[in-house]
View 1: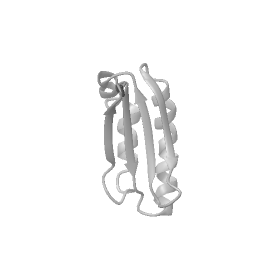
View 2: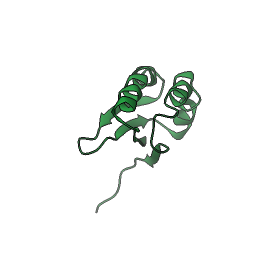
View 3: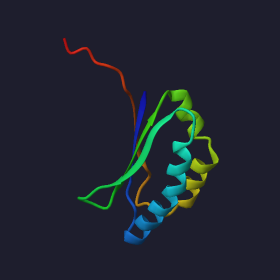
View 4: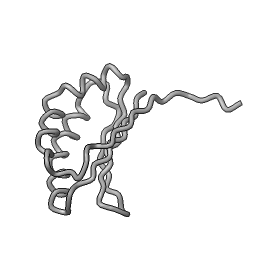
Length: 99
């Protein structure tokens, strides 16, 4: 399983509202994709940031997601709304032997 953490820092409160609004279509359509396990957006209570937390069955499926219309449209729609580029971290989940 692949886990993606994507942190977005909107420029201001108005930009944050727009990012959240644009994210609705992205989240809805991403959850319908084959191989998606979960896809959500959370707001940090301590600062102005937003965190997408995604789970995918494989790296190949995640790559297909990056090529979808809804993903591309989201990127275009939020252009100019963030104070910096998305901070994206990708993890591969596997069981760790603790014995």
